[in-house]
Length: 418
Ligand code: HAM
Image 1 (cartoon, rainbow, N blue to C red):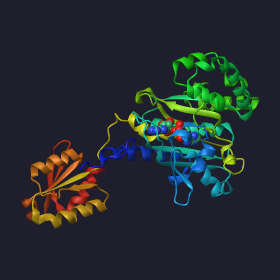
Image 2: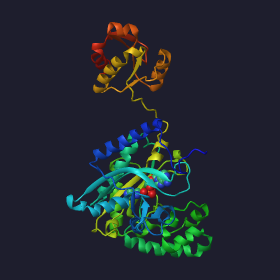
Image 3: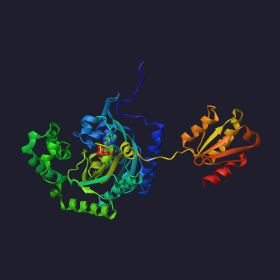
Image 4: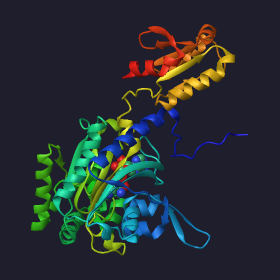
């Protein structure tokens, strides 16, 4: 019989890797709390219409990538393909706007998109992200981008990440720009791919982020959205840039950056890195000043970003991690198990991470295991030690060892580790 395998595009995260995940999660929590952001957890399943109304009926995510099914009562349900819509739904449903004029939220968790799996692209993947509801001012944009920058820096990635920044203006600006772009593209329509021809009708701005070289050539002289900014759009975008300069966060203006979700307006951004391969977006985000209203809430500005955790870990993969084990307890006498349990229990209650052997292996193989575990110290209890109430502490880095009274174990460990 064939053994059962995991589903294509999903992955098991095994113990060697969970350490790396926990490290990233700790950094995210630390930086978010430095900025006063609080965690929100929303369900993994939502009503399908939440995503079609926010992400957009005609986006890749909604048309091709969602895991959607009809529930027993006939409701259409979907495994969340992103989290901004879920967080906005929760914000409206629980009237979070009434609790405070500004809500600063962060999240982490799995998402699902039925894309073609490749390096850095999975069907179940994980994001961390932040969303701030309530402020339409540029300082909010700068704060959100600063969080991304702090997390990247803390992960050792700020040198290899490039911030691409753009503004796609307000609704009016986009309406005028859409007209101009369509006018420019219509003589080239036959040369565009089938996808772009469809986008030409529904959402021509999406053609700007095409990967096709031919289409990029056609777009070289296309009108720029910045020429259609209202005075308010321009002023907002200038202020965001000024604040990023104040914070010494380097950025590149990329007028072709439009992002693939419909809810964006004004500021949009992505941090990319070539070190992770062709799926180079480490994180992406932007303003969504009309989203809450579109989902049935009040007019409420918002901005946020989400980052692919697998992609962060790919970029961080060269970094070494210290073992979390402090002590490996080597026991050579089966009669001594209750002494071992008493001592290890004391050590753990005093905050030490301790591994013990439960396979009754030889000294040699327990020592080998101790070295493999990355423990800093081995504690050895043999026949002699058992009969004299002593114990050996061996520093596994320099090999130096000493014999002490069992009663002194905690004091000794504390003096060694402080
Ligand atoms: P997104 O650009 O669709 O935006 O996804 C954000 C990040 O998730 C990407 O930059 C990438 O790192 C990661 N990602 C996306 N798809 C996959 C995949 N199939 N496999 C692995 N990683 C992936 C959003 O999701 C928006 N909700 C971001 C946002 C928050 N905008 C405002 N607030």
